[in-house]
Image (cartoon, rainbow, N blue to C red; front, side, top):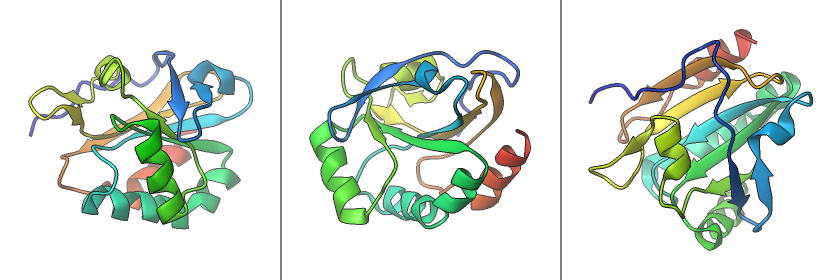
Length: 156
């Protein structure tokens, strides 16, 4: 699978506003000056690899919080689906619905797979100034390693 065309390290991250699993609007620029953000695109809720990957992030959320990094999961699922997914798995970080226009934010970030109709596994780490500091991706069938997140956080 070709690597997605993610935002370039050193560039300003494209801003977006999406609704979280509770229907609240979350805007990337709202974190400016407050915290870094790990934007974690994942294909679909309730699938094996996505569940395992997000559970690993849930179980290591202290690593992100200690570094002042807010996790934001993004998929093309609806807010209702993401709410059920978060409740079932105990995710205590926002899951954002890139539902309509379908996959628009994933497209903006170069992570949308047109032939599949969902995002690949792409992560973009944005610092508190809104600048991309790291990015990495894996195919939809592969989980991203936790070590890649550690390296990205170290880039802050």
